Picture 1 (cartoon, rainbow, N blue to C red):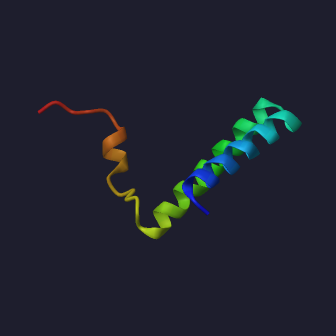
Picture 2 (cartoon, one colour):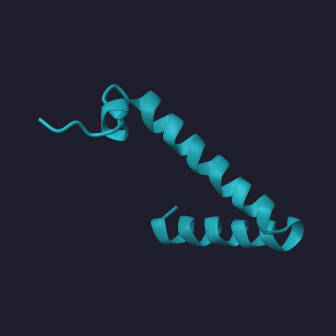
Length: 62
């Protein structure tokens, strides 16, 4: 499946969920999909979470 086909399918599914169950449910479905994608990326080692706390926390001036 090409990226264009996957993008079309993903968009179609989001709009379908939106039409059938409402925008709140569609938003939750998108967030769940993004969370699942992130978990898989972390488990595959593509995203490192070791320094994430330092990047998100308050910056210290030196």
